[in-house]
Length: 267
Image 1 (cartoon, helix red, strand yellow):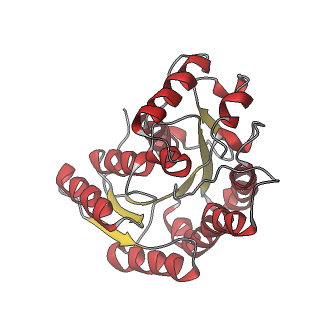
Image 2 (tube, one colour; image 1 turned 120 degrees about the horizontal axis):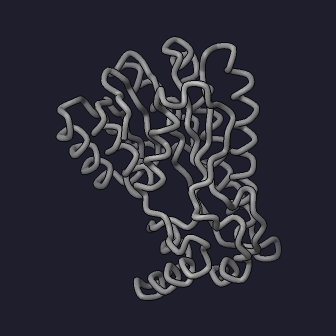
């Protein structure tokens, strides 16, 4: 990749696994100092150590729940105290839930929105003054669930649709201040998140991935690195006039009829 983040500071949320882990490692590989946020302390410290070893640049691990005001405030404070600046904010942390209107409860709704929407709004609000100073940018990680219709993930789909519109609105608000805002919208991506929410065994999860790949026009599910590479591209100077866009990384999954596939994940 023709990108260089030397001298830049990047904050990646949800960095202890999956897309966030892949993004943090790539940013470090291309010269960035990184702050990593997650709730799994063991995994987060492991990823942070690997980032430090990549180019020898500092990396900061922040164990925090971004669904709380305290977690967002601590993340913003510690990042500013450690690095004194911020160039890129990657809002990747999120939770999902498999439910329908008839099976959902309000606790599930509140949990999903607290992290996927409110936490993103709050952390971005707290850090945007730093991004204005550096003429930096924001990359939000959404999902094609926010724009396609399939039965089985109602609160998650609503949250991601809200995140997509958040990107559009604040990109217009911040453009005159030199801050770009974009979204990467993954399709089915190899991750533990689906396995956790569905209680799939390893065998069942592999079956799901194979079935999904068969329904994707390009014939493959995404890896975390596939999505991370797009995050870096949008965050780099290669995209200096790109703002307010939603970029799908899904092998054309959004245009396939996957309602029945998604329905199989609903308990």
